[in-house]
Image (cartoon, rainbow, N blue to C red; front, side, top):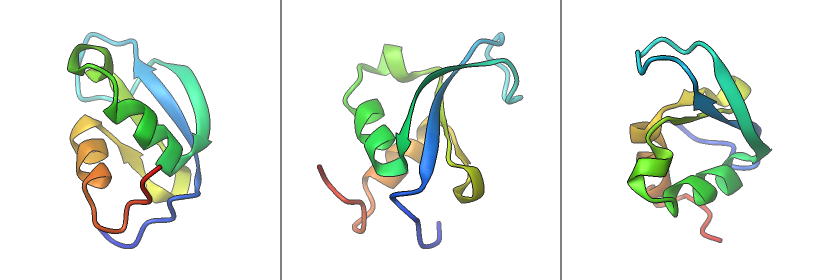
Length: 79
């Protein structure tokens, strides 16, 4: 992944579909800076975060694998 704008506005979404990889039918669970939403997600138990994605506009849409990888980057701003 390239350079990230950790302060980019983002939305935390929960997939309401049948579990497919198609990004359809989401319920918004929160909004804020990308880094803040990543922090919120990684502390959740795996069962609670399984259906979450983060939509960070131009930065991209991140599934759980992406979110966990972003949280482990050396340049990730720790809270």
